[in-house]
Length: 440
Ligand code: MN
Image (cartoon, rainbow, N blue to C red):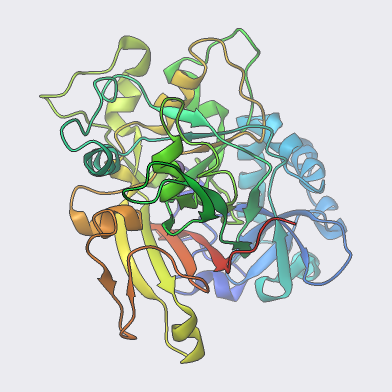
């Protein structure tokens, strides 16, 4: 687990002015990674680090000229069009580059004049997925989500008996994952109309979002090897925001007995910026299991987990309807929850995923599952917020929603704050629903 060090020092300021503004997601204490290029250009995509409203171009020659040692090797990997090689280098390289960048970008750096040309404004950039995602696994790690959804699908038996023992997950589809800004057509699927005795093929009428944390695997493990819980975080590069768009009517019809399939794999959207676990070090919280619940099996338990295994990441879901856009109105917040309330930690997800010898690889993505908190307002999906579509939400425009309408744009935001430390953010992930059209 990462120690708090000089890169987290709350007194650090940067010579990049916008990084010092109160409330920025990207102060010098954060230093998250993305893959970007200038918007509309045919430049190659390459790695970048966010600082204030700017991006430090990790492929810039100015930067290569001042780095040495492991930091220089890490920079060379970050100049590639995906960060897989950098992710695979492991924690020593990530940490060395973070230390180098923290020193080179702080107010008293002697490199300021030299590095100034290596920045691109965020508003002039477009992003790509930070990694070539080989495999994607989505978990179901919020017990509050699992219980509420379980009640809707199985009123007498909401939480299945394995839930408190096994981090439940399914293998998702990597090919339809896109970076923030994804617009997608309302998908078609097989649905069973109410009261009907046979299904039909139709555009989903119950399109939903799922507010999730995405976890990028860095250094992988060999097939046949296990990642022990105590070492699990060394395999985690960082986290982002993830929207697991879901067609609830398709899901309800298809999910038994093998779990989600076409209800989930038409679109998944990620925030561009990946915040490293090292950057999150000040925002850890004890991982706790209620005394009346079964305690985890030994391979999913440990001292570091109990002390600081949870991450206190604030999460919000916002909705912008087509009418809000047309009337120039701001999006409305639908929910706020914290990743701290997750039933399983990131380290437990990794340890469990590899307990049978399954190999994780650099750039693999884990989804946390919908992050709902203990109260109904903290629900991370419309399915929960509207009680399965039975209680519509009223919006300031006079519109109501049970599920998403065409033109709706969903935005998630995430950040961490704690007294004595500088607030850091995950940025945002946005995606928009377009009208249904049969796949061409
Ligand atoms: Mn999900």
